[in-house]
Length: 137
Image 1 (cartoon, rainbow, N blue to C red):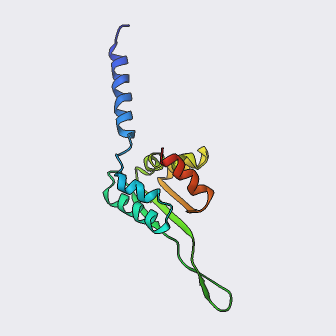
Image 2 (image 1 turned 90 degrees about the vertical axis):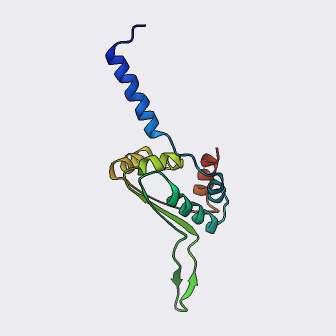
């Protein structure tokens, strides 16, 4: 097979694109926190990830705000974890963290176009178990 200048340019372009799309190495301790199943530890893991990641993103993670119910104003805690990501590398973050396996291709295209992603899950729910399974692989 003869290697033409055009073919060489194409090979170099593909190699550069694949290098850019590579996911950054994730610290095992952070991964352990995110996969712990404990709401506070998951939030802590994502917060740590946001401080050390090389991805160009703004990551906002919180454990949900308390809500009030009824006339007695009794506090009911929000059991969900909320994740909001914005920035140029948002789609890369979604793919590296395997959130792309939990959303539709149409929504993923929207993430790529708008450079923002919002997601919430309950640690005892199906969304988290699917996330943990794909992220833990």
